Length: 152
Image 1 (cartoon, rainbow, N blue to C red):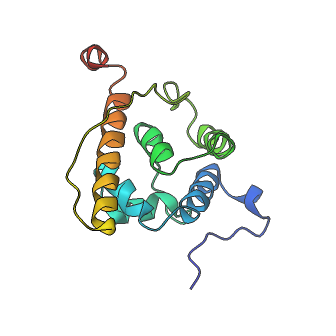
Image 2 (cartoon, helix red, strand yellow):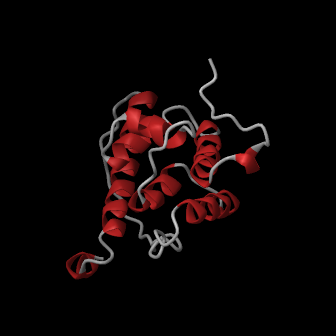
């Protein structure tokens, strides 16, 4: 059973909300297995929330404060980002005042134990990357808060 909205006129016939969700679904579908779970963890949400925000059939909007985290976890290209943001702006005028580009990041090197198993080592690295991305997303959502700016 197909859960996509009816779009007899193609992608241009979709609502702006459905259009940006279609773009995001294409991005997520072209990323490695586990991307939806990493997104859920980084956003502090469950997988059903991720399913709703990438499915054009659902009217659940994507909160602006989650966009940078989504872009980072999904390694969104500049072209994908521009297309997504154009549709997002059309769907939600005025919501993107702060989301203009990626926040400057800094690199931190840490040492962790070798788990003796390539799969476990990869999971540990993915968890650490997700945590770092989630922290960056928290700071981005607090850009209007002077105390949060003092932490950056």
